[in-house]
Image (cartoon, rainbow, N blue to C red; front, top):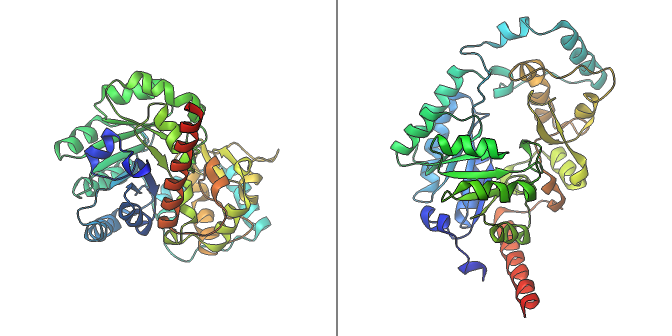
Length: 364
């Protein structure tokens, strides 16, 4: 059954399986494409000058295989911004709190430059990212946060399929009104920036308002039975993200991989401490510190990143086992050890077959 299960969106994109995989790793994206899925490469954390060379490598490795790119384009950011200028505007109490955490946890300064230590989310940054993405041969462009009519129009004019991650019926209607072609119903279960409604409750609501627009299900999905279940509910595929962090192709820092393996769904939580917007992450001592009684409320985006971006960069660079965390969904339950994308696909497809067999037995 699994090899024959294709939805209209699979045919439209030229992929073998209704599995869509989000990742920040080029190696993961290539492996997902090779396995017959549709990879979506997240570029919201890339420095603008790196994107053209990175996408040139992606295009060379992908060849004719279809793939997408995901951007994060929140609206409430400055037109132009510098780290120095925004650091000077940070509330002194927040600065003192974070400095106290640095001393308490003995956070070493980061050595290597990264997005979190050199960039600030701004309209100028977004435009540079958009221009680079539009110039690529990506088959699709997705926005995780933010809807922009001009981007949708420009992407469609270049033959790119447009996706929007939505967390409510209101967001879905707004996306459809702007001309978005594929809705990704991302539930509360999802890793990263997400809303308050669970995937199983959100999906049928989005399907109901989508009309002829394809809908994908996202949030907490990590098994083939879940993939099949969302298709039974009206989705044309499932969007998975957290699962791929267990793949060798993701090059996950060892301490983070061990945290993911040891954690269950209840070890994730939604916090504003990472970016300033509600974001589901796997907890660590750093995240827990922001829930203590004396902790201030996190600042909004992009100020929270300005306040703590060097810490996030440091704990990843130094693979700090006590503090390291990452955006992760409740699907973390399926991470039991390091694997590969190919092995993950084999397992997902096998689970889809087993689930289909159960349904047939029940029907008989």
